[in-house]
Image (cartoon, one colour):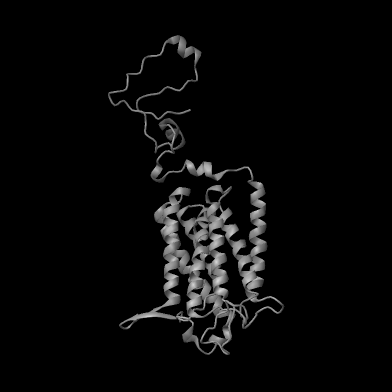
Length: 319
């Protein structure tokens, strides 16, 4: 357990905070290099990741404080203290999703496409964040006599517990690779976002059985996080199953192959096709001196093809 990694003069570097920074930049790098490939401007991808991160941080802290309200009732000064952790993932997810939707609406992008772009790497960043939890000694499990049990110095009594942070880290990384393997096989915008939500709902529900919980807001056999995961799974999996059947014959990878940054035509597409599909962006057919002068049409040809479009040196080719 290393809540403080090192100090440089008066600067203290906390393990939990450092892992959060690494997780954020890993997410930003993924978004930047994959945004253009699916038709989402790369600079807007970076912007939306910033807004989603900040909104997610606020949402996660607010929900954590709500769950542990007794702890903060007489210590309001501790609400903004994140040095010892204290973030509720479900609140972070809600805050981040709302930020992405609002940003995409303002910039006139597809919110579902924005959620695919941001939620796919989010589960990877969660795995990185759990490394910070392990180093900080928070979010640990219950007592175990298994050989990989870990003793955290601040625990009382000093007994080995399940390293649930490591359990979730491994499962989060596996889920990320599953999602990324589907990156070019999406059938519709929002598929990976829904898939990420129900995958993590399963992960969190299972890990909670081994995790130490001090309080449940809802009475019963399950923890608060498990009840939240059940709700998330029902909603996300239900929507994912419905849309997968609705768009089962759609192959998004073919559409993505036609998307190029900065309005460039797809590989193999002719200039005429580009001009037709993107009027105003394609290159008009112009007389540059090397193109033969258009020959006057014969009266017989005009009469045989009364509806044929006339191609001039300044007008894009139209069908």
